[in-house]
Structure formats: C-alpha cells, structure tokens
Image 1 (cartoon, rainbow, N blue to C red):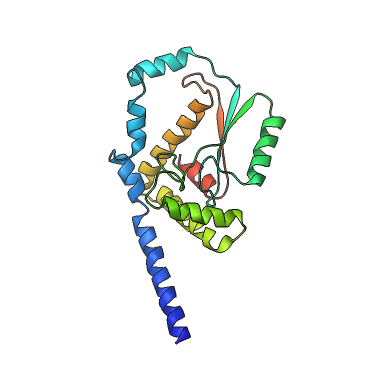
Image 2: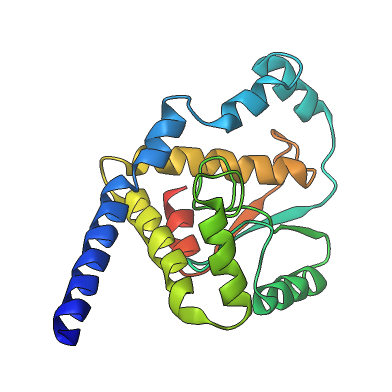
Length: 203
C-alpha cells in the first residue's frame, strides 16, 4: 500500500512537471501579445518613443561603465539576491571604479516581476521563499525547475527570439533605472550566473 501511494505521488509530480514545462512559453507569448502589465506601464511615460530617445541622448550617464547582473535559476526576484551574490557585486563595484552595477533585473520574466510579485501563484512562491530562507531547500527546487524551463524557452529556436527580445528590454529598463543614457556610447557588460549566463547569451 505504501509503495503504491508513493508511486501515485511520483506520477502526480511527474505530470505537474510536464505541465509546467508545456506552459512555460506562455508567459513570453503573452508578453508578445501585449497582455503583460509592462506595456501598460510604459504607455504612461510622456512623449513619443522618438522624443524619449532624443531626451536620453542629450543627457549624461552617471557612470563610465555599467554591469548588469543576471542571477541563476535559484533567483526568485530581481531585488532578492543571495548574500554571496551581494558580496560579489560589492567587490565588482569596489575593484572597478566608475562602474555602476545593475542588480535588480529578473531575467526569468518579461515584465521583470519576481515570482513573489503580482502573480497568480504569488502565495505559493512566497511560501517557498520563506522555506528557502530557513534553509529548507527541498521545496525551493521548484524555483530552480520553473526558471530552468524559462532558460529552455530562451534557447528554443521557436520561442527563443521572442523571449530574448523581451529580456533585452528588461535589461535596458534596468540600465535606465541606474542612470544609463541610450545613445551615449557608454559600454555595459552582462554578467550571468547559471541560467542567467545562458539568457545573457540570447539577449
């Protein structure tokens, strides 16, 4: 009886994993179709895109070099980094004077909203985040699995171009928040860890 129950649980888990994989491209496709809130937020910015670009070109960037950090598949939000990641990025800023580090990019969502943001399963991801903070890592593997599927979407020949185009926009938004001026010619570098490195290649 116990063996049968365990096998049933494994079967249910396998089905859920397959469903997660099949549904993983829908987020980027929904963004491409204009269903994402990110498009509504951008519409609130005054002026036409051409006017905004002209304003940026005439401005000045606050730094001489920018670094955009893309976290690994264990990331749950752009504004939530592991202490090791924070220490590493602090060293980058200290060792490379004049460099501004963008730390708040979540490369696993086209609207840059973390898993604990305004999502359908926000409560579930918040619960898993709390477990992760308590070093209960078994359930936190769901975060890795979810983000791993997004990496697979990025590498896919069918959905990858859409996903990577959206990721490029998320990266650009992060640079702008840090003071980057489009058209200034100031270089920026993408640093990716784990799945973030794979997505950086696509972006």
